[in-house]
Image: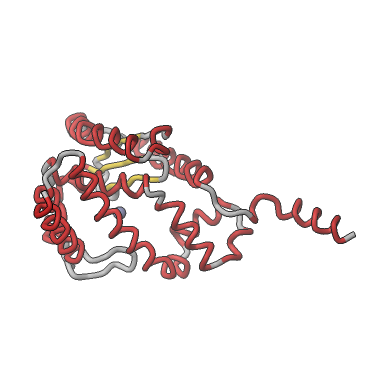
Length: 239
Ligand SMILES: [Zn+2]
């Protein structure tokens, strides 16, 4: 009887009780990305500046090729890169290498090629280091009951549930710092000079109205600049 009951419970609970997987996170990201891309296309804001699109693609191509070599899992991904003039977007890479870069953001910071490469390297690191998946795993650790929640709801909450987002803030800050640190080293391996890359963080801090302000899920621009400068100095010394 007990055995049947356990079997019955398993069937009722189904796969939701299992941990979140990279496949699930990638499928979710692909869907969210598609929706955002479609929205931009409808508003004639998708890839709406050919020159800018070509510039971003030329800088991203060798970086993505290097990511595929260094992170073999990502060689099988359907990487996608689009640009937009939409001022509400800045730049991101979702699980599975789904990237968007806004010209408004790049223009506002007046990013040169090395600085734009640093931005791309940071975003690529989020994807190849599986930061989306790790955030779900951390959320499950903090709130184990979410294992029973349908994935789509969990995915929504991770970006909209303020209580959960506050709990994850420290973890997300760590991920941002990791993407900065690993991204800088990754871009150097791709051939960029450390000092040229660091200029991205200088511009970020200079442009920010609140350079010392810690957003609850992002380290302050000033502290990011300082960390990048220190790492670049170390790398220059070791060259
Ligand atoms: Zn980031």
